[in-house]
Length: 310
Image 1 (tube, rainbow, N blue to C red):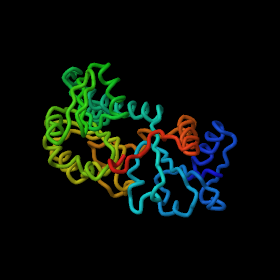
Image 2: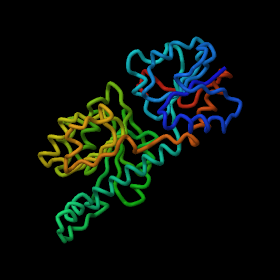
Image 3: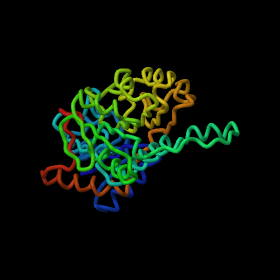
């Protein structure tokens, strides 16, 4: 039986090598060269793979998504019915996202956009020193990524708040839940960070209504999915000055069209969905472990709950 591997051409060989390093006995086929469809027992895929195509494999028993987010799997027609899907919860992915969040919190906290503008204009002016203990950070989504991102921020002395769908108690963090809780946290967030999974309930959650609840001069950081943000509403808040800046790693669609205003907006810092990139050598052991579990009919690691959307 074989494993079908489908990802970007630039990383296909690295994934193959990483999986074989964990289990040299694996037979790996690189999409689109799947060979006999009846040979495929598992598919390890990323966002570009067509879920309808996976219905070609009659003995498929496992689908693995090469990342933490699974919203791409939820698009019609979705995965083949009855086939379990696992996502990656990987230490390196989590660490990278924490680094990216910290980078951008410090970028805004230490007034880096203002100093870069002064450098461009050859202005020598010392700005008022910011007080870390007074810069409140609100994190939307307090699962694996949000909890980890909160750690370094708390170590530096930032007050950190977290929002989840259901009540959750996290030592050292003030937590909120539900719609009222989100509104309450936003009203106190000098920097609002979005690390939510994208579901029907969270699509468009960063809208004019939520942005209006932020303190004047607040900042937005989005490392989750582009679909969380209503672009027109964020641009209006940036143009008015109510939101002082935004760091955005994710967009809808991707790649971002060349004529989109984010590219040239002076208050927007962009990265090309690069905040947290799966490293095959780190993720491969988890993929192989799930394949072994599927073969033995044992519970899978990080099984996607499609009813919850992640």
